Length: 293
Image (cartoon, rainbow, N blue to C red; front, side, top):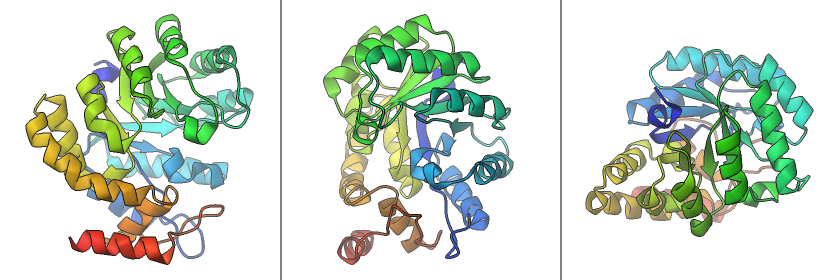
């Protein structure tokens, strides 16, 4: 089965629950995994940026990956986030991380360095050579400070065998359309923007890797399935039902927003690691009011 078929639908960039001691809360992580799988999502992305991976040490990352495999127990595919802005270190991580049970790795474009397009191409070429699993590019200029252009994405898709797809979160619809028009048939393209997932699927995307589906897994994944089936008449009400919630999720920072929602559901503690801080009292109150509606 191709990755494009296997990862069609809604993937969840799952949060990492913490205890008040700042240790990883594995009990709550297990509850969250059950919650999102039971409410219809298609796959899980462990150690994405929403998982606050940049604030973890290597031992914690290994424990989270292995716990996630065990808890998921092959109910859905698991993708593992392995990225960074030191190409050599990411290559070493791809060799050392427990990736045997993952279907792919998701790797964000190098942040802060602001490499040229050739630098981005060479970074991913080296990762693809080192990776034991297919590599999904992650373009998120709002976080990294640089954009993977459509031309670079298509060059990687066509020239590098182990580059299998992209999570495209540029918010640039024209760029997305160029990728979708010219991609190879087996190249996975998913949205990284919850707000515009429906119109991006209308343009031809294969689904989404979502933050919102942590807390709205049923409505969001059903909206995605309906959109993929071309039933936009039925998908549109769910899209608009989630719209205000999506606004609140990203009102201040991620994952503070999604953790506030999950706290209100009683699934996790409202704890984030610095430099992220919890939602301000005013926005958190708006979360409560939205949920009452």
